[in-house]
Length: 404
Ligand SMILES: Cc1cc2nc3c(=O)[nH]c(=O)nc-3n(C[C@H](O)[C@H](O)[C@H](O)COP(=O)(O)OP(=O)(O)OC[C@H]3O[C@@H](n4cnc5c(N)ncnc54)[C@H](O)[C@@H]3O)c2cc1C
Image (cartoon, rainbow, N blue to C red; front, side, top):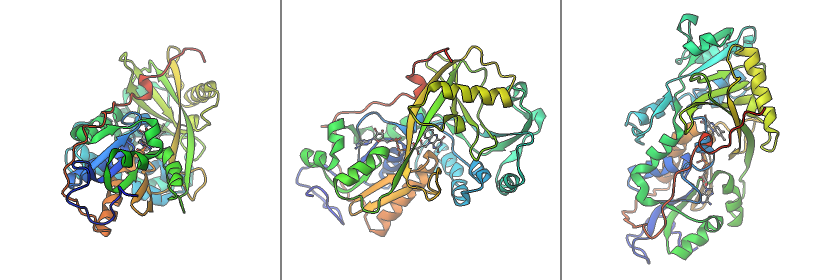
């Protein structure tokens, strides 16, 4: 189509000030990280978002920068465990203002997650897998050093310190976007359904088009006949939330299954009260399932493993959301890396995990280097397009209930 210039950039365009090296469709963590990475290298980039920045999965994420231990314990995905274990360092660099993307405007909610292994549940296989990772920062925490809340919870077992920072996702989204608001713009749902048509109609020229629209990427590739060989999957979640939680808790609670019974992170509701956000097995269910099933599973897990936690006063809510990613070779799991589907001047991208956003950025830069796609020395003005708002996290926009 007319607007995509393959190969090297032209120094001027048919519509002055409307030429980009790269146009990105989708303002979740994948699009925003990539925008920041490419802008820092001197590319002229326009990011277009159809709803709100932070969008769908990113703003609903628990914010955990995984170290790999959780995956190693599942015993299936050692490649994933290895690759992901390099990520906490990259995010720490970004938070410290070093590294290729500057996240010094954001903050971590917690410096670590705790892996809670109830007594008698830790099989030999799991122990061997965990030992491999223990050398990389994970270590058992002596009971006298447990956080006070954990000591009061009635938990009986081992607590392992994990080098997994937990990010404040609304702050991360803002910090990624803030320096580049002049090249982040909104498009309507209708325009987003035909992104290339929108570019053409608006006289926007782009050398590369990146799609970081998660669940919408596949349909768009099909629309333009770029889906050959593209395989994707969605895995639904019905996340649980408890408002009025007694204290901050950041933990993976291991049970008998491959995945933790519950992964608990703590966030702050608009009224200032603490929210425990629950992923893991309790949330692994169809979005349409009865919310009561999430509450029941969570209550059961707390009663069994953290029996002294008083949940009598908490309010509940659930949040249905799909994880969208490239297709995994291992049933029920995610791919080991970010996925990029290359189709001519289009790149369709899924980070797989928020944790992998830096790796996705590196992969895109590598593709540009291989293709000798250097910054085209373009300067454009996107102010003719509307601005876009930030999304609120699930605990900032749900309806709470005390009913079970
Ligand atoms: C409940 C939950 C918890 C999670 N917890 C963690 C965690 O703790 N740690 C971790 O590493 N990962 C976690 N993940 C995974 C992680 O959130 C995702 O891998 C990551 O956020 C995906 O980012 P994304 O930018 O691809 O997608 P999204 O965040 O979904 O963003 C896609 C954006 O694209 C926009 N869009 C779509 N189509 C178009 C279009 N055509 N034009 C313009 N805009 C478009 C959407 O509106 C949206 O804003 C979690 C996921 C879920 C669902």
